[in-house]
Each structure stands twice: as C-alpha cells, then as structure tokens.
Length: 154
Image (cartoon, rainbow, N blue to C red; front, side):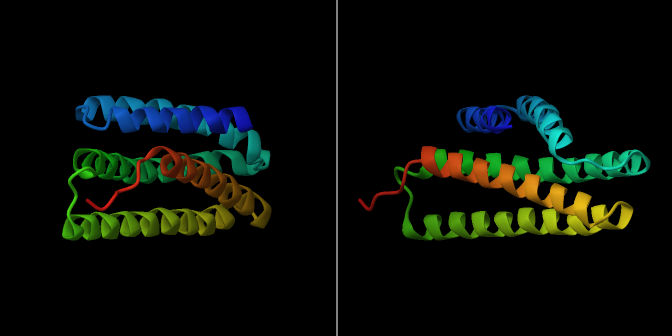
C-alpha cells in the first residue's frame, strides 16, 4: 500500500511541474491519478457484495468532486510557482486564504461522503473510506509541503 501511496504522491508532484499545462493535460493527469487511487481504495475499503455497487457508484461521484478540487489545487500551485520569488505580503495573504479555503472544502467533502457511505453500507466501510482518503490526502499534503519552496522575505 505504501508503494501505491508513493506512486500517487509522485504523480501529484509531477503535476506541480506541469501546473501551467493546458486543461486537457490536467484532465489526463487527474484521470491517471484517479485510476491508481481507485485501486488503492479497492485494496483497503471492503464493502460487502450487496454494498459494492452502491459504494462504487458513490465513490465515483465523490471522485468527480474531488478531482474538481484537485484542479483548484493545481491552479494554486501554479500561481505560487509563478509568484513565490516576488510575492508581496498582500499576494501571499490572498494565496494563503485560498489554500485554507480549499483545504476546508476538501476536508468537508470527505466528511460529507463519509456520511453518504455510512448510509449505503455501515460504519466499518464508512470508516475505511474516511481513513484511506485522509491517509492519501495527508500523504499528498506532506509531499507538497516538502517540495514547495518557502517564501523568503526580500
């Protein structure tokens, strides 16, 4: 599983360098990321046979929304890459507020879908979903933080 998480993180990090690519490249990257991620989730989340169809339908709905937030994350990374050497205080403040808002949206999305998964399955499957999504999200956030340069006061 750690190997899969590292692969997912590497794909996301590669997206940082491609952040200025056109929309089709971002969509392609996210499609590849979603496929690899879905395999990781399938290894970890174990709905019963009667729950599987409903779970995967709901998961695909979740992934569609998560990918939209991922596009926003790529756009913010691109914005940062363009400005971090010359970023002013007001620009840094505005960028940070966008990052905070995006993190809230992402965390909220996982929480909302935890509830939806629980309705169509049970607490165990919902918790598995919540745990793996948070694990992956935390790994991605850590990789980004480790690879994005800090702003230095000029």
